Image (cartoon, rainbow, N blue to C red; front, side):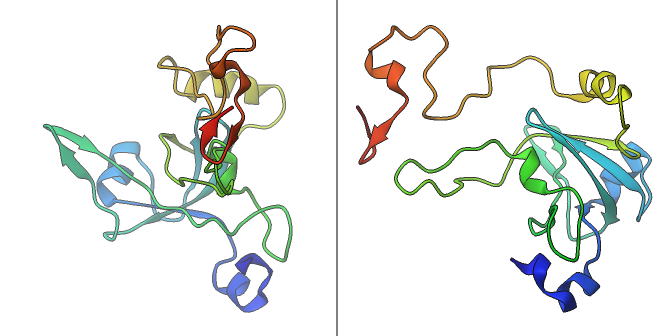
Length: 161
């Protein structure tokens, strides 16, 4: 992984989230500020990189923002910090179990993550609420009959057992 290469670690010493100037203005975030990124799976903190390379999309009359984050930070190596993978659901492609996607819905919150007991209250405030359950593609539905094709969750050669 690139986080173990000292010359790359020197060039990129901290996790960042690149965002459009429009999103930064909307959220009152300046370039270099700490931000927290929270998804249904977890929460991490990074530095904001405000850039024109990332632009908002206009879809069906709505403005949709996106951010970009590198995936080479983590708890090991010369560069330590939160890992972007902590936000992504574990969803291995069924035939070879390689992560199938690196895209997700998240909330961006200015400031650092709270520590200790305040973290749980913070999560309850900022984690996206409602919507369908966030199931793994191979996970059976909640009330699948035991022993049915839907209950196994296991696949072989791309087909449910």
